[in-house]
Image 1 (cartoon, rainbow, N blue to C red):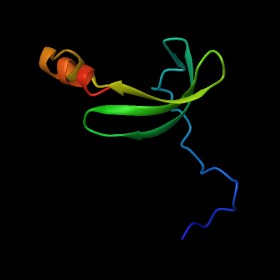
Image 2: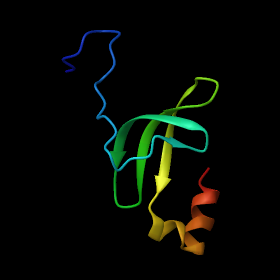
Image 3: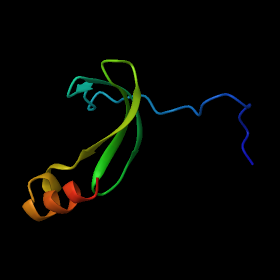
Image 4: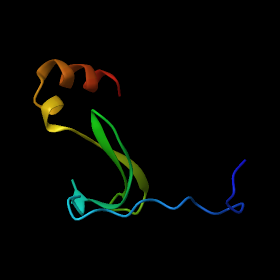
Length: 74
């Protein structure tokens, strides 16, 4: 059972000093989560649309096999 009021949004962790403020023209607002492969941010496009932006960790991004599998997951 949720403890928040209807129509409210959950509190998201603020960006840390290590987090970027912007990626690819999208302004980051909060960190939604992180795991072994990536960090996911709440971001907004230049037009103001909210999106979840996944940033793959460097070790995976440098792996051509992973990049090929990730590109096919879309």
